[in-house]
Image (cartoon, rainbow, N blue to C red; front, side, top):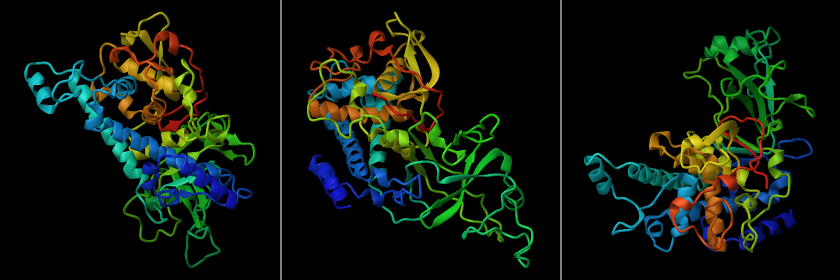
Length: 452
């Protein structure tokens, strides 16, 4: 453990002191599975040395975004690259020529435009900017909200094997893990079955949900997920394929590197004679084994990427965790299907793009979503996807940090010493964005590994 301490200390020393000063220990914000890795496959002990670095990076990226998006810095004439990145990731265009209000429109300006029968897309740009600012502030609040260990504190697991699927005829357990008899006066008599218990005691349809038994440190209880979000696999009637190690369904057997689960709580009010084990109400972050594999960088290197290097080469180990953070910050933030540019088109119209049902992954695909949103007809606020895309928030934070660190422009999807002459020229072109890897289809609120 001594070597782990020094590695975490080194990670702190190489990151900006201003960021570190306000960073609480991760254990004060999350409960992490630090059980023996030899006994629990969901243990995060093998990755304990990485958490300190990841945690600091997440704080750094969030703090950088808040600082860059402040009215003072956003409207600074010298911060053109920040405005260009905002256009590329979120489709937020500034004024072409700044005035006394800088590069953003005031509420009074928007009101006057609307009274004159115009004001779009200017109103959308401004409200998007406000939404992005708010979300990074909310992320910082989440990252700094400390609480004691308890039923509502979010958890981090490094595999999904802590979940044991329960069937209709499995016996209902109490908080000690013991089966509950139907007649309390006859402890050895007939036991309650889970389906009967749910329909009799909780008045909840067992067939519409998945039920799991879980253990975490000294806590054990039930974990319920809706089948509408996790449809059954054919033949095996489970939400995920079976893990060959445990013969049990595992969320980490998909192409997803991370998950956020917000289980259903027990119905309220509870029956007075309910003796069943706790029904978790916490949010659970699953960082699957695949999120730790490969040759992804622990931190951004000290030197800038070479000219023309793709934006996805910036990927670091923290990105799966940072992606999942956005699902915790706002349940409306999801993983949208990516949009693909049609070869030979200039990408000025939404007809120049197509979708293939695969979730957005990586910086380049996040930029393409921004490009699509500003293609004609320009997407209005109520239909905007960029400001509800976890991958866009995560990669904007990382790219903004790289911009600051290297003094480079990444708005076109590649590293450049010189920025585009105008905001409208940013975003990947059809040539630079057509070579996109494919994976299996994914559902909302899932994170997929970003490969370099």
